[in-house]
View 1 (tube, rainbow, N blue to C red):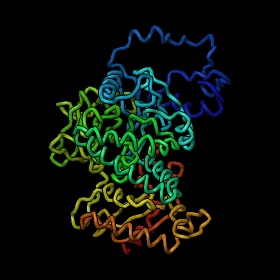
View 2 (cartoon, rainbow, N blue to C red):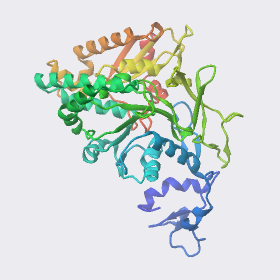
View 3 (cartoon, rainbow, N blue to C red):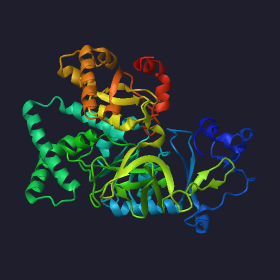
View 4 (cartoon, one colour):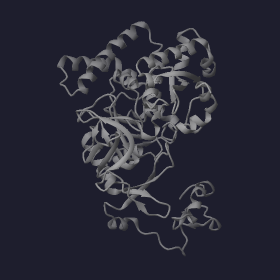
Length: 484
């Protein structure tokens, strides 16, 4: 361990006396023996095994790493991942994803995220690719503009935020440019629809798309560093279809994928090579099999599946049934073409007092189709109807306000209380309700100004919603919405 020992080593010291203790905590500079540190140059310490020689003893089934689940629906679990898991997943992705050799990748999500670990470290090692390390995710837009990567992975919240930034930039276009953009977007959507169904793209459409992309769309994408993309992907949570369509209209087909820490990342994926369906998470990667249990829970097996969960005593306990199937905790559906559609986490399904099962993600994504709604939480387990907490989009709201003659000075808190904004969001809820079934509809809602984030605890480090935290912090407001 290098760096400031007082800060860097402290986080590890507790492991020296844990149930599965560290053998040694080696500190390069400033080692403190009273805190259990071993100096790197300590002549009395047993020599560190020579890693150059030690690799010869490794087999594909040796443990490579232990990664912890995000803990959105329970306590985090230690997932034991072997070299075989990572290599099989890397081979599968390499056979599906078309990118240039040695393509640059931006590594910006926490490396506790299995997707970033695979795409930001392991797959680039497998492909001998360049990796740009972006330590602070808030600087991602600047890094994107500098690197202009041919491939980019983002969780839904990242794609949503980028879409909001692009919308804000386009809002000031003169009428003539907006008309030109809408014509180009129509061509891009037509082109994407042809690709989606695996049909051959007519030569005239291909020519119109390339012309629209070069003359109109690419300059817009260049402003956010996405003009050289050949592979855009998303995972971690269902992506709102409206966001997928927005990017398709700019010539960027974001390929939704699905997987877990336990599957060493991607287990199903959409791609140009194997086909894609907007709204689905694609078909199984090579070497992976998917089936559904009687209650719709997704079961998976394959070479990339983890070895088991790590217990406190260091034992790894398998989590598959007698036939090698792992119950993922996700509820889904398979269509006739073999595409998987994720409905929600099994533990997060809302069961109303009338006995109706409702996917909160489906409802929330419908609410977020309006650009003013940046985040949403649907609530109603055990209740006769659903209510929602909505968070105003901090990028889009000031732009919308200026376009409607509202001077807020960019203060989102003022906008969240402005009658025109409140009325527009109410119309957005009604529009979403029109697309939802009766049990899914939102009866009442509350508009908030403060965005949820990892720093305040409502989101995981990988930007997934921690429902329990949001509900606990807004319990009184939710009770009032339910009429308690």
